[in-house]
Image 1: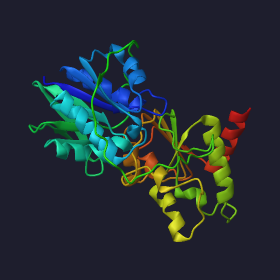
Image 2: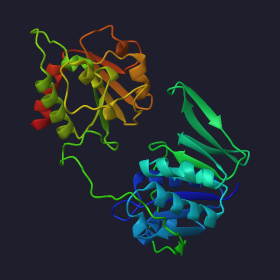
Image 3: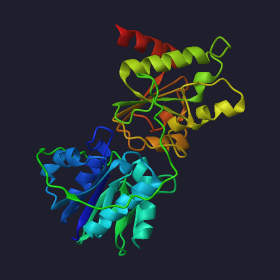
Image 4: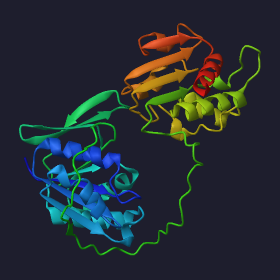
Length: 336
């Protein structure tokens, strides 16, 4: 097996995030000589964090220029680290920062790149990448002869590495940071407790368009629906997802949930989460939506229609009930 480079950037606290540790596990499983490349303002803490990973070398591009994600500076740092490592395989977590910069780096190096990899293994001494095509309906195993081969690994596909910390030796890599017209002026974040997308949550709660439709009394109750949903998210520390029909409702002049955006969309044209458990409410379980639940381990649904798509083998358990009533009771129990 050829030399492998794990390329990671530090997080705000100076350490490595879970996506980087998952990519480290994937790189170790390939079995070749491992080199770690780090990019950030200060990288010693991150190097110490993975001191026991068995890396032959730890390279680092450090400096204030790499404090914020920018294409110009990130691409320059990644290119310099890749050239210093001389590795044929470059594995990186598919964070927004690397997903933007590394395809361009692969072109600069004269190599190839594959994104959204969900599996990585060695076969006959060569790495084989697994990824999905056609809206996650077809799975393919890929291999390439072009080098360097840059592989962006999706989160949640490998366990995060958790080995002993220590004091690691770091080899600095000189990078001439290019001038940039991009200036980061600050960070806008939701108020504490109001974030709705939580990748680490144990439960994914998905709302369908039925929440905004007329209920048994002939009226819509979008405001109450939002209170019930947000109350449950806070108490259960769950993540929020939505069907396409619900997130599109705002453009159709219908009642909407203000907490729901296209970023919450789950399914064929949305995201594919990997939470241990999922609960769908007021959604009929159509195939384009359900395809986004492919990697959710335990799937349950609440719907008044006993013949909906969830009842046709798409959910482990279907509760034929009014989601408003169920969520009211759940919130009472969680608040007790």
